[in-house]
Length: 175
Ligand SMILES: Cc1cc2ncn([C@H]3O[C@H](COP(=O)(O)O)[C@@H](O)[C@H]3O)c2cc1C
Image (cartoon, rainbow, N blue to C red):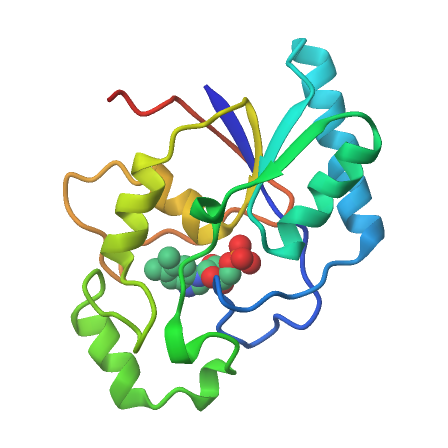
């Protein structure tokens, strides 16, 4: 079993398509606050002081605080948010409606011009093996890990992301 937190609210995300290619900063006080909560979570449950995070700073900065407090911290690119390709970082309003409609028409297979399809994210998140009980990552990744199917996600069934700094506990996927 492992618990993954979504990173704190980053700076500059409003109205933009922010994915695995856009490395937004996070307020150090917010990163420290989440790190405190993760440390308390580990202490309450007697968990090893070990954490793994996405390499993107909005998640990694939480790992850096925990490292200062004696945790073993490492990053794993497999925890990155979905790569939205040429859309990544752009204001949603700047993405042509026709392109957006192409995505909605092929929600899981659409590749975002040089990015990663939702199918690929689902495969990546499902296959991930937790090396420790504590992780910090991203909203889309957590949704992909939590997706139970059997149907493939659609624009109507894809859930809203976990709130910033909120957690999800997942059973290790049975191999
Ligand atoms: C299919 C899909 C649709 C999304 N729409 C937004 N996000 C995701 O990408 C953004 C960045 O996530 P974070 O802030 O946690 O790094 C958020 O809007 C989140 O919901 C999506 C992710 C996926 C996979």
